[in-house]
Amino acid sequence: MRAWKRYPLLVLLMLLALLGLAACGGGGGNPGTPGTPTQPPAATTGSLALVASGLPAGVNASVRVSGPAGFQQDLGGSQTLAGLAPGSYNVAAAPVTAGGITYTPTPATQSAVIVAGTTASVTVSYGGAAVNIALSQVAANLDNPTYLTAPPGDSRLFVVERPGRIRIVENGNLMSAPFLDISARVLTAGEGGLLSMAFDPDYARNGYFYLYYTDAQQNIVIERLNTGSNPNLADPTSNLVILRIPHPTYTNHFGGQLAFGPDGNLYLGTGDGGGAGDPFGNGQNLNSLLGKLLRIDVRAASAAQPYAIPAGNPYAGQAGRRPEIWAAGLRNPWRFSFDGAQLYLSDVGQDRREEVNISAATAGGLNYGWNTMEGTLCYNASSCERSGLTLPAFEYEHGSNSVNGCSITGGFVYRGSAIPGLQGRYFYSDYCRGFLKSFLASGTAVGEQREWNVGSIGNVVSFGQDGQGELYVLSARGIAYKIVRSTTP
Image 1: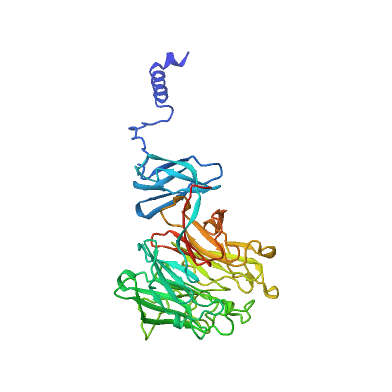
Image 2: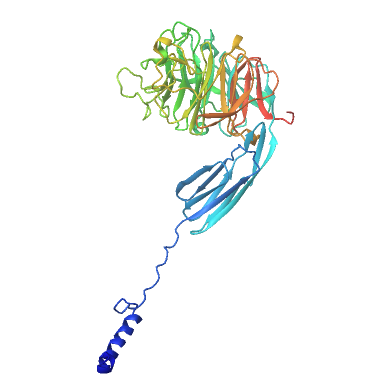
């Protein structure tokens, strides 16, 4: 007899149990109350998409994005920045020059608001136009001009003359009365003379300015003076000698530049003492102030203590090493200049190479190599050890019969406003060839080299910079020229 007939109740109960298991999915238990679905966390950052257009292939844009909490990033083309904190960001684009054409951005500045979880978009369009420059004469009949400068914002030009005078050009006129005449105490033998001047960063309040010259004993002299009650006349009796550096034997390689750095300290570029090949080994001698870049603090200068040693000078407190030294290994750094946080230092070569060194203004203790190296060439072949040396960012060969030049004249990076297409270009020349050239540096990488068609200048002695950041060229012909825009290629 079948089981369902004999035990109908038992079979029914078994069927009900099987049906219950099937209803539970075979899991054997109550699944409980369904949970709330997991939500992704809320976004806390956003993005910025930059589109840069209008530049030729291979030419980078120049765009800086800055924003909250000191954020800053430079972009060279279209790019999306992610992970940005919410807030307002500034997008500033600078002109770019390539192949003699300057590409101007539109808009030059704009803002973008970053919202968490979203992407903001900005567009920079570049349009090109050729950049050409010319030289405009601003003063003539100068007596061996060696330097030109001005206090920031001042409309006057102060032109240094090698015999010991400083002349003022105001409203296009060379004033007959010199601003200063110390010719009675200046030696002009060889390469000596009144070689440069620098205005105190606080000149508008204290009236101080500083001179670099050679005295009757052939010493290098750094001296402070101040302007008198008449702003066009200095007080020649106000002189305070800051530093006197012996320079015996030879009448060449005096150096000649002094300038205030972005840190407010005074920097001096001294030659190696002269002769050929640094016969006394001053460039590598850290117990000599010759063949060096020096850094001193003159803010509290007095007769009792004319200068102090700034914190961070690399050889301060070291026996047998001069604490004034900031960098070593120089032959004749006739001209150097600061561009924001960077230092451009040109060093005149011996027989084959001229060089420009580019470094961070805060980089102390560098050794530029002379007289072990001349540029990137070994000069002293018996001891050409390059370890620990800083080689130039840019150099050029003299060539046969000095066809390319023989003595570099370093200049400035253009930061004026009259010719936007020149922004960031470093200008230089050569005393022997009288050309006008420039390059654009990114860090220590040099590109966009160009020679400018400005006609005959003669022997270029120095460059200058006025109170608005415009650049000038000084010729041994006794002429000061201003670099201006030209419509002629």
